[in-house]
Length: 81
View 1: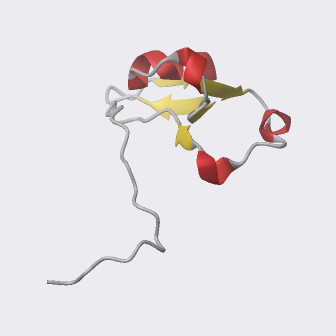
View 2: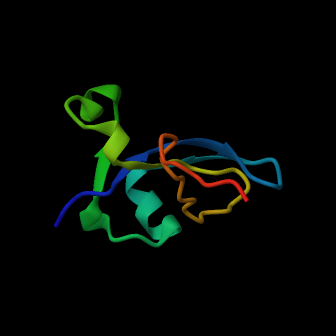
């Protein structure tokens, strides 16, 4: 199975003001993706050799909105109407 995501943990401030650490291994559940499709970065060394442009980076969000946003490549031609 090809890896599609890079999960990077971090600290977030929740709506009630509490500070929480979200680990890289918690992110697939929050984003509802298959963990087998993920690389997990605990430290910057874990990203060495990865083609970041080929991966969707998943990070903790303080707003709790864990919907993956698809971004079109910037060099894609878009016809104006």
